Amino acid sequence: MTGLVSIPDNAHEKNLSLSEKQWKDLSLIAGRTVKNLCDRDETGISLLVFPDSLDVYGDKIGDSTIINIQDNAISSGNLMGFVGCNETKLRIHSRFDPKENDYFMHYLLGKVFSVNMFDLKYSTDSESVFDFILFLFPFFLKRALSQGLYKEYVTNRYNDNRVRGAIEVARHIRQNIPFTGKVAYTTREHTSDNNLMELVRHTIEHIRSKEFGAGILSRDEDTKANISLVVDATPTYEKNERARIVSKNLRTKIHPYYSEYEPLRKICIQILRQEEIKYGKDDDTVYGVLFDGAWLWEEYLNTILVNLNFKHPENKLGLGAIHLFLPKRSPRYPDFYNDTMVLDAKYKRYSEGGVSEIGREDLAQVISYMFIKELPCGGFLVPGGEKVHVESETLNGYGGKMYLLNLPIPQEAETYGEFCQQMSDMEKEFSISVLEIENSINQKYGRL
Image 1 (tube, rainbow, N blue to C red):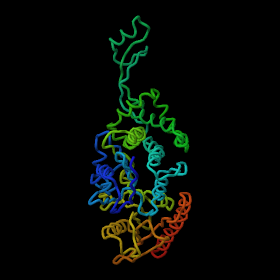
Image 2: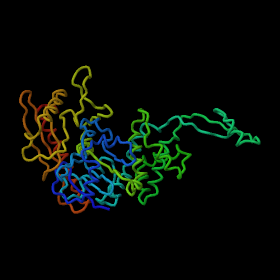
Image 3: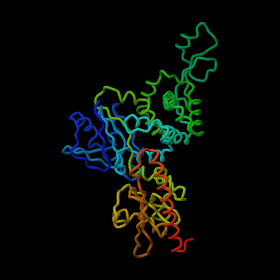
């Protein structure tokens, strides 16, 4: 097995000491768009990418590449996580975590997916990434079941005395002569005991067999209830049918009403095939899990700002939009807003230049949101810096204030537990700063 290649996101890494085999393996994904890789039908491709709706959020994740290779240099973008290309393993960590220990990325994932990372024996190697996928399963199961149990029409064959379908004469003669009171027949039923729900059941049983599986499947009352619901809905489950069920679900087309079952299907396939993928001998095997840094940063900030009564519009569901034209036409989706300000999450590094460093398009977008919502304040939320710091500028014309507010990322933490405690302290300072901005704006513009 070849070693682990580790690079930061949004970087251009030169003079890497890689073997010819590693360069060849990484060429399987270099220069190829995420959408192209995820759409491939070959069984050797098994990538999970979040957000799962690649282009709904306006960031064109599907059109981006994981890496590009040119002149023995690797360039990365906003995607971070882990990818295995045959025997070569590539880890892309956050550039805001210079120690390359992935504390920051793991912390964001834990917050966004409501996972207690202390339940996972913390490690930054490739095996821990696959273990982490198991911890994501309850999140996607809950999201899918919010749409109800998945049902579809299934053809079932019976041999009993309750005939409710077409009689199979040949099978009836073969099984029930001399006559025993039973009749062989087939029927079409709209049921939850189908290939997709069986896939979910097999995933549950697979996780249950792991050392820490019981903790994953019983971490809260909702998870326990969801597990029971799936078990009750799949009475025909057979452990030795796992390979057949996985095969039946590789290219499943799910009814649009059950849209949340598609990401659940993908993560189930990844979990059930991970041993085969990691240790398989087939050529051109690509597997792993990737997260868009901008999306992850935005969703993490939501876990803080939701407690400060900010709205977080959801493009995918069409919720919380503001509209450019009357009556309710041309919807737009700010990252966050309330009755005082609109805030934009930026997974970018800014220096001491403050608001003046913000790009023209980003400024114009937030200013337009302020105008439509008649708000006196806009701002940008960024990671990094040594301490929570606020920069502001006064807008010309109608007036108003524009802010740049950072949330520092601990740089000297020796353990993951220490990092989490320091992040918690930073979040409290960050929240106080947001509230102070809001209060000062309300006082200045008489909006109390």
